[in-house]
Structure formats: structure tokens, C-alpha cells
Image 1: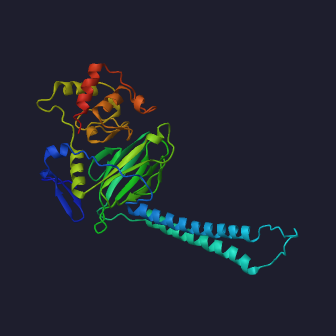
Image 2 (image 1 turned 135 degrees about the vertical axis):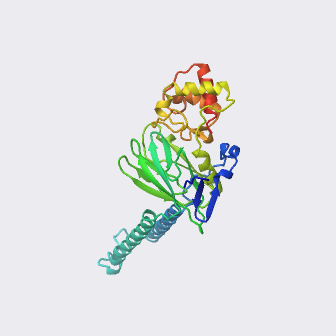
Length: 355
């Protein structure tokens, strides 16, 4: 929501004045939180909780069937085992027990009906949930092999790290995701927040989350999409409303073209970036770089990882990545730029300023 005098972010029962946030704080907004284990048995969002409860219910029914059938088999094995005094004759055969035949027909049918109805109820409650007025909207674009997150309400583009506000039960602020593919089939899956949702080229799919605990939740692509499928990771940062507002404010900022007193190495690195093929693939808002094929680099150093979660985002790893991306993520579409040692040093100096 943008106004002429002061920009604000509006949530239900919340209004934060972004101009009151110190620029130094906004510029250094990097979250360091230990990610939680991506377990389906620790749901932290309504869709994941619905799926978890259904799974436990189905597991309990199957366990009951297993115990009853297994128990009867064990009982029959010991009760009617061959004994030394047996004469070897076939025991008396009993036919036409209507009660037994009715039981093994009706009971399985009832079990199937119950499982069908409970599954249909969960599918309906998750798939047909309507977005409330204060919901966050994010367009997820899956690429080989990284994630792009667009926030149309705020004009923000993030990469590999999805930031959303916590959704308190009494003041729900869910995040609704529109899922698109830029190339092949993918699948969006954050086990603690929602079930798997396929991402198919030329088709629009949807899912939603309402995480109720602050933290970092891990996920990844759950459909084979190429050589680096296993390394197409993602992180969901669930933040307080105030922290999410600060993050949006920081992400809206553009890169300064020629800040006063700029380090000569940084200026040289900017020239390297703007005079090579980097600008054809990447965007840095505030510069001539407006490529759409690769990730947006405007706030590169505010991210915790490189290569969709493959390595931590450190100057050393950034240097390795730019020098030879295939050494970190074999098969990725980013070419080695074959820069001289000085050009590489200057370029890294520039990229380190992108916060």
C-alpha cells in the first residue's frame, strides 16, 4: 500500500510507519535463525496440520486392521497347529456362514467410505479455503533450479527465501501462493507448512500457508526436474509483523548508482558487472541490469544461502560461485565468466554491497 507522504504496510490491526525505521537497521536486515527439521509430524500451519491429522487417522485405522488380522493369524496358527496325536485327516469344513461373509464384505466397505469422506473433507478445507482481506499474496515461479518469489502487493522480488508474517490464530494473516513454472515440472513442498503442490508449465496452481510460529522452515522441489533437482532448496522465514514490514521496506530499496565516497574497488566492480553478460541474466534495480533469466541480485547479500540453499552466502563462497558455478552446482545454467583475478576481486567487492 503506497501513499505520497509516508509508505505504510497494512495488516489487520496493524499499521507500521516504514520511514521511522533507521536506514542502517534496514540495510543490515539479515535473519540468522536455526532452521527447524522439515518433519511432517511437526505441523506449524493449518494445511499441514489438517494433513497430519488425516495421516494419523488413516495410520490408526490401518494399524487396527493389522493388529486384528495379525492377531487372528497368530491365534489360528497356534490353536490349529499340527499336533502329534493328529491322525492327518482333514478337519470338518463349514460352508455358508452368512455372518462371516457379511462381516468381511460390509466392514471393509465401511472403512473405505470413512477414509474417502475424511480425505474429501480435508481436500475441500485446504483447496477451497477463501483468502481473507488481509492475506499476503505471493507469486512463486519455479526455475531450473531456483525459486523466484514475487510480492505484487509491495513490488518486491525475492529469491529462494520466502518471507511471510506469522499468522496468529486470533488474527489470521495467511499467505496465498500462486504457483507458476518457467520451464519444466516442479513441486512446491514445505513439510511443516503445507502438502506438496505440483507446478506445471502453462498451468496455474495455488496453495496457502498460515504459519503460527516464528522461525525458519525448510522445503524443496518434490518433483524431479533435472540434474540439480535435489539441490533446488527453499527457506520460508516466518517473522513477526514488524520484522516482515522492515524486510519489505528493505527489499523495496534500489541499489545506489554512484554513492558518494564509494570505494574504487566497488566502482570498478560495478563497471565489470555492467559491461559483461551479467546484465543479460540478472536484475539490480537502480542500474542498467534488467535481465530476467537469472535471480534478482538487488539484495543479494541479505540472503543466507547461495545456489538455492546449496552453500552459505559468504564472500568466499560468492567468489567460488562467480568464478566457477559448476564447481558448486554442476549443470547449472550460469556460465563461468572467465574474469581476471582483479576483475573477480572488484566484482565481489561490488556484489558485497548489495544488501
